Amino acid sequence: QKEVEQDPGPLSVPEGAIVSLNCTYSNSAFQYFMWYRQYSRKGPELLMYTYSSGNKEDGRFTAQVDKSSKYISLFIRDSQPSDSATYLCAMSAGANSKLTFGKGITLSVRP
Amino acid sequence: EAGVAQSPRYKIIEKRQSVAFWCNPISGHATLYWYQQILGQGPKLLIQFQNNGVVDDSQLPKDRFSAERLKGVDSTLKIQPAKLEDSAVYLCASSLGTGGPSYNEQFFGPGTRLTVL
Image (tube, rainbow over all chains, first blue to last red; front, side):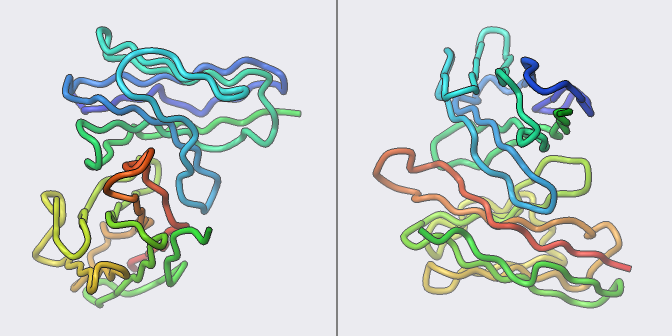
């Protein structure tokens, strides 16, 4: 079993849709949870960063962490064509520790 | 604020040749990471530096890969000799490493795309 599993893609939605992206993990030591967005031929860009369980909202993006279920989600409201990218979940066991990434899911938002 | 710089952006080599990648982290960032991202997968950590010292190199294939970070700033990653399976994007990232808010947030460079023929 991989440490981090991410829902397979690709995912295609119409503009304005609500998008739900999910990851599960097996390592109970993970405490820091992140979502990165990666455009084609670019490096990953940090979108959301949460510590431990709970919700965090930033504009159209909401990150949820459920440590009891070892499950994290990213919700995108009112999706835009500019949101079309690969989304990677990542997590670490400690501050300043290595990140363990999911495989990523490619999202396409159709105008 | 300038981001993480990497060069070259693209490199094509024959198997068994050697290659080197360069990374300049964000100014003031003490921690530097090298990740390997194979097509269709998430990045995998190869090595982590804190200033000049190595924190984690457990997933670095040390028979062919080497990395150094002289003076705690720039870093180079070398592969010698290269194999076909080394074809990937090599990403450099940096973080503050100590103190301050969000000190462990990692910022990534654009990567070097390596093709081994």
